Length: 152
Image (tube, rainbow, N blue to C red; front, top):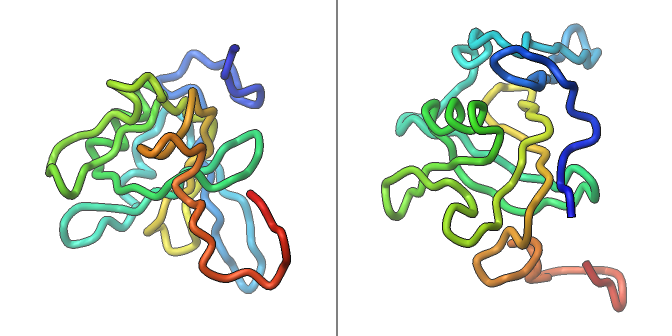
């Protein structure tokens, strides 16, 4: 099965997709597209005191949230270069290329930031389950639901 992102523009720049940032001006929300080959947008991101930024990973096709991980500037740059997710493992204190050993990699389709530029939303085409348990998503433990018989 081919897991390419259908909406990814084919360009010859350094990065083959745009980084979109939702910015609020005077109560209106505008989409600001930062140049695909530009690294200037990286300087605008707000990493925490440890140099980390949370990354919410979402399936580009189904819109389901798959996982939450953390990135450093280095792992974000590496992700952009290889067009697959690379994170920072807080427990092992090392780079973690998602799926490098399992084959369950995540091809990046699009990256957005929140209004404060301190959280990333990464849309991916997953090549297998996101969770180490083998589940498609790391979010499967329902702790509250008003509906009956809801499944994910």
